Amino acid sequence: MAKTSVPLVGFLLFSLLVATAQAGVEYMKYKDPRQPISKRIRDLTKRMNLDEKIGQMVQIDRQVATAAVMRDYKIGSILSGGGSIPRLQATPQEWINMVNGFQNGSLSTRLGIPMIYGIDAVHGHNNVYNATIFPHNVGLGATRDPDLVKRIGSATALEVRATGISYVFAPCIAVCRDPRWGRCYESYSEDPNIVRGMTDIIDGLQGEIPRGSPKGAPYVGGKDKVVACAKHFVGDGGTTKGINENDTVIDRHGLLSIHMPGYNAAIYKGVGTVMASYSSWNGVKMHANRELVTDFLKGALRFRGFVISDWQALDRMAYPVHANYTYSVLTAIQAGLDMIMVPYNYTEFIDTLIGLVTNNFIPMSRIDDAVRRILRVKFTLGLFENPMADESFVDQLGHQANRDLAREAVRKSLVLLKNGKIADEPMLPLPKNSSKILVAGSHADNLGNQCGGWTINWQGGDGNNLTAGTTILKGISEAVDPSTEIVYQENPDISYVKTNNFSYGIVVVGEASYAETAGDNLNLTIPLQGQNTIQSVCANIKCVVVLISGRPLVMMPHLELVDALVAAWLPGSEGQGVADVLFGDYGFSGKLPRTWFKTVEQLPMNVGDPNYDPLYPFGYGLTTQPVGHTS
Ligand SMILES: *[C@@H]1O[C@H](CO)[C@@H](O)[C@H](O)[C@H]1NC(C)=O
Ligand SMILES: *[C@@H]1O[C@H](CO)[C@@H](O)[C@H](O)[C@H]1NC(C)=O
Ligand SMILES: *[C@@H]1O[C@H](CO)[C@@H](O)[C@H](O)[C@H]1NC(C)=O
Ligand SMILES: *[C@@H]1O[C@H](CO)[C@@H](O)[C@H](O)[C@H]1NC(C)=O
Ligand SMILES: *[C@@H]1O[C@H](CO)[C@@H](O)[C@H](O)[C@H]1NC(C)=O
Ligand SMILES: *[C@@H]1O[C@H](CO)[C@@H](O)[C@H](O)[C@H]1NC(C)=O
Ligand SMILES: *[C@@H]1O[C@H](CO)[C@@H](O)[C@H](O)[C@H]1NC(C)=O
Ligand SMILES: *[C@@H]1O[C@H](CO)[C@@H](O)[C@H](O)[C@H]1NC(C)=O
Ligand SMILES: *[C@@H]1O[C@H](CO)[C@@H](O)[C@H](O)[C@H]1NC(C)=O
Image (cartoon, rainbow, N blue to C red; front, side):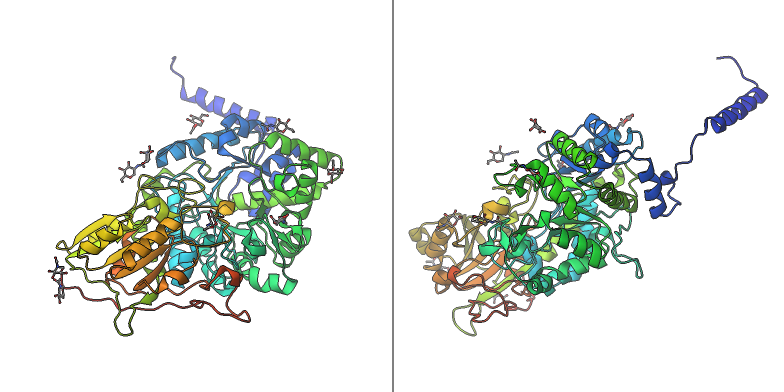
């Protein structure tokens, strides 16, 4: 290259500036972070055409996403549905590369509006291999500790950011009124006050909203935080017989006093998004309920984030499913839904919605409202300034500090229901120095069972290679004195139990993993194999039963045999938390977040009901003191 003189460079630069000014290169106000968000939204929406607006309202699953699809259809959002992952055991860096690749497509559009990536992080970052798996919400309800739950929110936000994601479909603030519901474990409690208290998890996920912030405006506190989603609006936990996605039959006062308080609290905390419920209220689908979604949530409660649909919920608004998609789209958008989790056939959704708008069935003002809300969340999140993943968080996934926090949560979630057959002869805490003990049951050495649904797979999994963690058996073996011999048999036969001179047995049994409708259950019995294990162990040696379940189960027939009974819910990846308390390093402190019924015929039965006759009442829980072990 020839040498260029300094004056010549100066002249060329000057000419360039003149040319630029003449060409009228515009100042893009929406790209200027110094501008207030309201002005950025106004500037950007003025520039958007109908295709671009409707694209913002679309959320697709990563399975159908590519950078080209994001660019060509101007898609506003992507999600990972339960178990939708880039590769089995993908590393955080692989997640980041995937998310950034999609974002590249979005940024290469005319206006360069970044997409927002959402995922079900409902007990930690649960789709991701090696993430810390926290206890499911029912166990957190037993802790009665909103500060703990807030810290779990912060840890979850960090682990989600480790994979380049900035939006979670959590918390579930359902008030489960019937344990026959397959999602009951996603509910903190049957008591609306406890659920409302646990919305402090939003302070951890999004950061704590500054005092005096405008009511209803979304808030996100920084690059280590994520957008949260209060779900499922509203009444998801009140359906008939606990049938998933069914009808919640209750008067308005009941709806507002039982199922709504969590939303008041979440909006007060600046929750960014709300997900509509599949369920109906008195026969009207929530996805079609304009009065509650638009007039109440957006009007009376002044919620200014966006309302997102549930997975394929529009298809399910018609019977048979997808029977009249035009009707579904029309009704849901008119009701006030802003973003639709389509999640596969985006061309059908886009074409249908464009048709409804161009034919004046849906006014442009409704589309503009939806787009403003979506953009408000994106601007609040700082996505325009930082659309790509911050790779400095990768080491947060499964970080020891987060695992220690999960272990603390497990300890505090355990509810001691029975301790000794004879008064003043408690069985727990257990000595660490017995000569030989038996550990038995389908859930003693099974990480999948102890994590429950929504773990790596939508329905959860079985066995110990599902992800990284510590089983309850491993926790026990680390807790006892090395002189103690531990014999593990999943299903020991009676003569073996009788003839081996065990000091006592620890029986860990419960429900196999499930999620959503697959978990609906009208009998609520312990699976037969577990019942057999209880019988063969507890009829022959002193035993403690640790029940791993998403809800109370039928216990009456076994209670006489059992010396001690612990409800451990679905504790997650840190099984040492169970051993910490069984062996007295910490005391039992958990309180029942739900009524423990005697028989399923009593259901639904919640605290405060007339004829309340539980096996263990709501709030029950024996305590023990930590002991100073000598060994
Ligand atoms: C999971 O964690 C272990 C231990 O830290 C590490 O060796 C392994 O590479 C991790 N796997 C993935 C997929 O991140
Ligand atoms: C994004 O696109 C740029 C070029 O446009 C490319 O250099 C980069 O590798 C892409 N990033 C990802 C994660 O695909
Ligand atoms: C509720 O469940 C019943 C029984 O499965 C079914 O017939 C009915 O259509 C469901 N109702 C709603 C609103 O989903
Ligand atoms: C589908 O829904 C639309 C909008 O409600 C309605 O006009 C149309 O008649 C419905 N079609 C059928 C076949 O029911
Ligand atoms: C998407 O929907 C359209 C109807 O709009 C249909 O023709 C097409 O087959 C669907 N595609 C898939 C992959 O289901
Ligand atoms: C276990 O330790 C306790 C307290 O140190 C002691 O009293 C007891 O004898 C020990 N039991 C066995 C079996 O070693
Ligand atoms: C996990 O274990 C199951 C059964 O033990 C086996 O089929 C599967 O291949 C294992 N998966 C991995 C990733 O090792
Ligand atoms: C059974 O174990 C106890 C200690 O727990 C021991 O004292 C006793 O000798 C053992 N009995 C037999 C038959 O091994
Ligand atoms: C209880 O209900 C579940 C779920 O429907 C079913 O799988 C199980 O077989 C039932 N158990 C009994 C004993 O009926």
